[in-house]
Amino acid sequence: MLNKDFLFFFPSTVFSGHEKMALKILEKLPKNVDCILNSKLESKFCLKNNSYLYINLYSLIKTLLKIRLRNSSVTIIIISGSPYGFLIEKVLIKTLLFELIDYVPFPELKIIEDRVHHRFVAFFNKLFVNKRILIDDWQVKYSAVKNCVVVKNIVEND
Image (cartoon, rainbow, N blue to C red):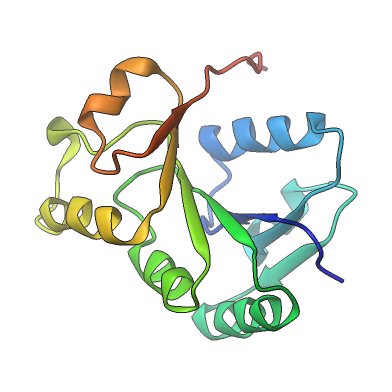
């Protein structure tokens, strides 16, 4: 049964650097945490916690609805490799009235806007993301989400 205040959401199908860093942090936490995982990441996670797996958008909606019905005050922390990604998931999370925290390695930087839709994503991030977690102080002024928390990367590289 879900009785946690936070739920970590890993929507990516690729287990890259940012997901690895977040997993290392989660493994060091003194408490077990619950996660929603894309089923393609299942083999990468060996946490002692509940993991909700989803295979497509429909199963994600069902999972989020179950969580919403069980607990009315869950905050979802989305572990995203880019501030430009997972817009549909962010809209879905906010539509179901969850608080959303976005954990990204960098903010919306003009230099990395390589697609037309990237120009609009910053606006949607302002609308849908309640708080953003960044990894360095200089990033705050470039973030579309102004309610930011900065955490320095204290997890060593492998």
